[in-house]
Amino acid sequence: MSRTQDLYLAAAAAIALWWTISLQMSVRSFVQEVTTFKLFVYQSHTYMKEVLSSFENTSHLEDESRPHFSFSHTERKLVSEFSQEDENLIQYIKHNLLIPPPMYVGLDWGFDRSRGILPAVMNYLKNMKGGFHVECCAFEGHYSQAHFLETHHHWEGLVIEEEPSKLAQLIKMKRNVSILPTCVSPEKKPVQMMLNLRPDGSSKMSDNGTLLQCMPLFSVLKAAGKSTIDFFSFYNEGRELEILKTLPFDKVNIKAIAVYRAQKNKDVSETLKTFMYGKGFYNVNITLEDYVFLRNENL
Image (tube, rainbow, N blue to C red; front, side, top):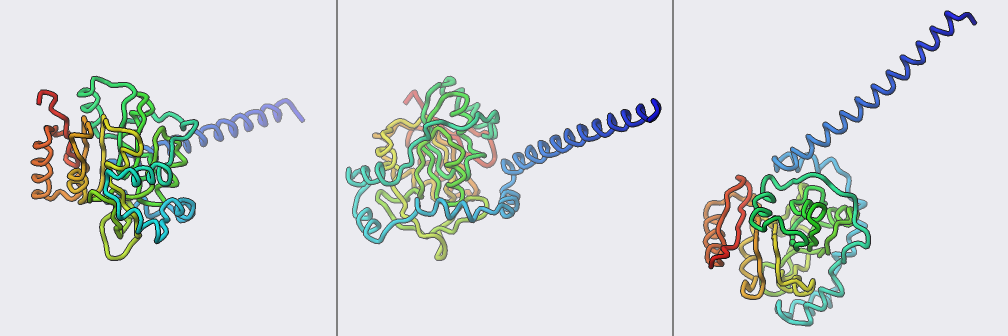
């Protein structure tokens, strides 16, 4: 083989290598762009959340987590007789329902997905380290408002998730949280509710759906050994006010609350604000989709 042919082959190999590297970089860039776009869509557009989620096959995950949601007839009858302050109910939740934090937490995530809520809350809390948060309906955990607090401010938390397929993904994330695999009761006692679980992770009461044994939030907090919540974030479409009314605010110290107002019902919104004002909170307008209530420390 002549020297010229060697040069041609070397040049061809170099071009092929350059093309391969360029292609890999382009693919990586494309994947990153898609991920960023999906994050934006998940944060900003409820309708698109449903579209994107509908393409995700989570049936196997639902099968994995289904045992966490199973209650025998005897259990349902037994717990339904307890009030939210009954020690029997508190111990039942503690030993039979709460999933403890993992021994080793997952990888750090660098994004604040709170749409401006966390900066306002952390400013109010003076950038508190080692706080405690409660999150109702955390979906699969990736688009959580509070996860940033765990990874960047050393917080711990309690996450409540009522959808089996989302729960399995949440557990696999290995967040620094305890998990309650059921719904929050809108009454001061456990209640059974038929929930229609939708593709975007939200839910609503329905005649057809998944039968869940919902637990009072105060009982869950007692089971977790917590009486102070530095940040409470929840998305319980249509049940937020009912849940808040079950809490004895003289026994639970809540400093900041974020409520996702998917319904955008003016009457419901005004009732919620009036209730929170009466409990010593004031409203901070940050986004069109959320209410943020901060406790008035001067009261």
